[in-house]
Image (cartoon, rainbow, N blue to C red; front, side):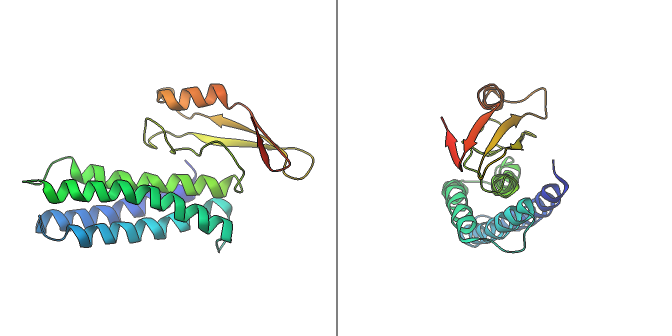
Length: 183
C-alpha cells in the first residue's frame, strides 16, 4: 500500500475508533451526532486521499465531483448502519470494527488521484467482495498521444477475493485511447 494512503488510513481509523468508542459509552444516545462526525471525517479524508494520490494541494472541479459522488455512496451505507445501531437493544461486539471499515472507502479517491482521473472501469476497493481489504492497484503504462494508456489491474495478495481475481483476468490491460475507455 502506498505510504501516503497508509498514513491517511491509520489516522482515519483512529478518529473513527474514538468517535465509535464515545458512542458506545453513551449508547443509545448520540447516534445522529456520531453519524455526522463520521461523515465529516470521511469527507475530509476522501478529499485528502485524492490529493495525496494525485500529488496535488487542491482538488479540481472534476475531482471534487468524484469525491462527492464517492462520499454520497458511502453515506448511504453509514445511514443504514446508524439506523441499525439506533434500533439495537444492546451494543453489538462487531459494531466497532464495522465502523472502522468505513476508513477503507478512502482508497477509491486515492486511486482516482493516483491514476490521474483516467476513465477506468473501477478503482481498487470499489465494488469488491473484500470491501477494500486487498492490496490491489492499477499499473498505468502511458503511451504516445494525448490520453493514451494501457492499464493493468494488479493484485498484491495471493488470497485475493473473487472480484479482484476476475478483474486481473479481465483488466490486464484495459485500453484508454484519446482519454476514452475502450470496451
